[in-house]
Length: 114
Length: 116
View 1 (tube, rainbow over the protein chains, first blue to last red):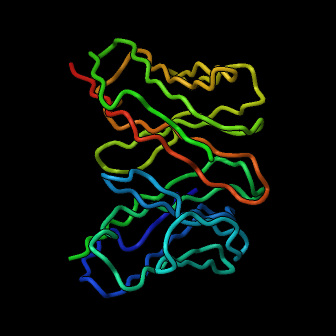
View 2 (spheres, one colour):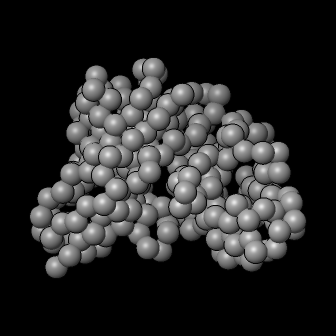
C-alpha cells in the first residue's frame, strides 16, 4: 500500500497570505489528523477529520481550518499567515475503525512565512 | 489534561550498544495507547512501537522493546544492538482511547546519536 502523501512538500509565503496544504491518506483509512511541528512548541495537534467531519480540534486560532472529502483526502488552510506559522505540518492517517488506532505519518509540508 | 515528559533531550551511544530512552506521562484515563515514533533527519515520522495500556505484556519489535509501568506512568524504550540508522529524534506519544476522536500528545523528544 502507498503511504500517506502530502503536497506540496515545501512552500514559501509572505505574511498575510493564505495557504492550503493537502494530504492523501493510506488507502482505506478514514481518519486524518494534522499536526504542527516547530522548534519551540514541538509537535502540536491541530485537528482530526473522520468521515468528512471534524471530530477533534486542538488549541489553535480560527485561522487554521480544514476539511475532508468523500475519498478521505484532507486539506488544511491557514489564512492571514503570520511569521509564527512557519513550521513543518504533518498529516497522519489511521485505520477505518475510528478511535484509538495507530497513526501513520506523511513526509510533511515545510512552510516558511516571510 | 494529559502531558508527556521526556527528560533526556540528547543521548549518544556506540554501535552495537544498548540504550534506554525515558518517558513519563500524566493522565487520569485508564484506557489509552502509548507510542514511540522516530524522526530521522528526513523529518519523516516513523512508528517504532505501540503499547495498549490494558496489556500487561511489554511490546517488542525486533531490536526495540518497551518497559511499560502503568502505575508509575512510565514508558521507556530500549534499543538493543544500536545501529547507525537509529540516529534520529525519538518521540514518546500518548493517545486517549476514545470514540470522540483521537489526538496524539507528544513529548519534546530525545535526540539519539549512534556513532561507530
